[in-house]
Image 1 (cartoon, protein in one colour):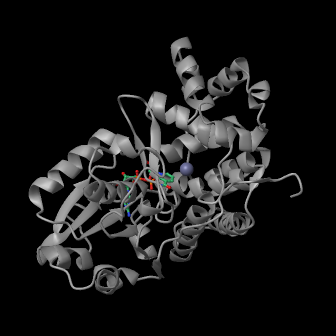
Image 2 (tube, rainbow, N blue to C red):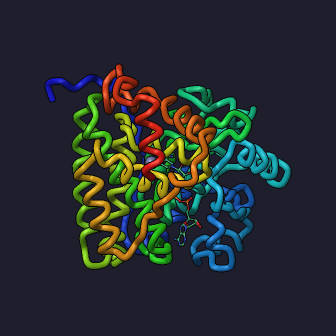
Length: 368
Ligand code: NAD
Ligand code: ZN
């Protein structure tokens, strides 16, 4: 720890209210009461992952039946600035005054809820706020309800969006982006496809492994990361990673991982993963797993464990992308990776280019 560097994060902003447990979705009315007090249902906007169209849980359905607006979020593509702008426009055109945003889904839907909430009160376009502390006013109050565990989006102060015009993948990093209330109900993740469950769950593991492997450290972040890693290990090495007990533990790991990452930085895996997402359109969590395997020379223990867990849980991580990459794609992948200075410095120090030469970066991508 002596050689560690200060992350510069001095003040941490956490979610104001958290409730946890099987059936805790039933506390939604109480959550609404706490966040906004008495409110007319027609001023509530529910953003719901499209998997739930035709099968909205009863608690949310009751709200919609009473007049709340429901909008399905197509999470087959991760959020873009353009998609967020269109959604905000649609909400402005259909709802007089939005008093509350409820986001119900995985990381894509939670991030969509956060971005929409900020834009409704701050005006302008999503791309105007990609960066650090650019959001000036608090957003519309918001409640987050994750249905998939791992990204930690329920806890963080960002909402990741890709700007198709510039290729920039960056969120609105702001205290105003943090949810006012989150409901962590492990009953909601029972229907997640196994592979998706594994890939997204690994995001928590990877965030925390990268944070603990870095030089920028924060004592609270370290403690949160260690516990998140321990829970992930239990889940993935258990007989069934999707038992109710395992889903409960992964939900906690995701939340703690999100709290941890807000205090520190990721390492090498996320920059390579971002390259895969920006250049090849591969989803964040799958891209992480592909990147971790190709970076086993830097993260040998983590890569070995991931392979062991994947085979134990009957999940396969695709291999062979590297074989079809063109020279042009390799150049684009390198650029989209190397741009992430802070995490790369966290992992390898300020002279990271001495280790990550063009030739080596290309070789890593070719090995995927
Ligand atoms: P997701 O939200 O993109 O959803 C992935 C798939 O899972 C979708 O097909 C969705 O329909 C399905 N799904 C979700 N819940 C389900 C359920 N209960 N049953 C059945 N299917 C279900 O997945 P994700 O991996 O949670 O989120 C990825 C996004 O999170 C990326 O855009 C990434 O950039 C972002 N992210 C954000 C942060 C943050 O701090 N804000 C951190 C890491 C990643
Ligand atoms: Zn991640």
